[in-house]
Image (cartoon, rainbow, N blue to C red; front, side):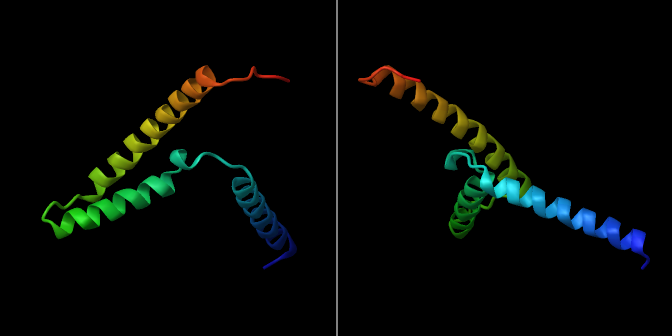
Length: 92
């Protein structure tokens, strides 16, 4: 491996680390996490399989997508309801 290849590899690794670090320093509500919903669907699919209601992987993926969208919508609705019921005005 020559110096150019080493430098290119080092830049690629540094970029990957930077991207990963940024991803874990920014936060989002739990209900917008595909990991959370994916885990819930996987547990549900496993329980369903025990009772003779198996879910194929494509159906599981579809459920994760739907639940993420619904989770975001429900979160937005709760924020609006919370603002309407709030006792204090929003300040700067």
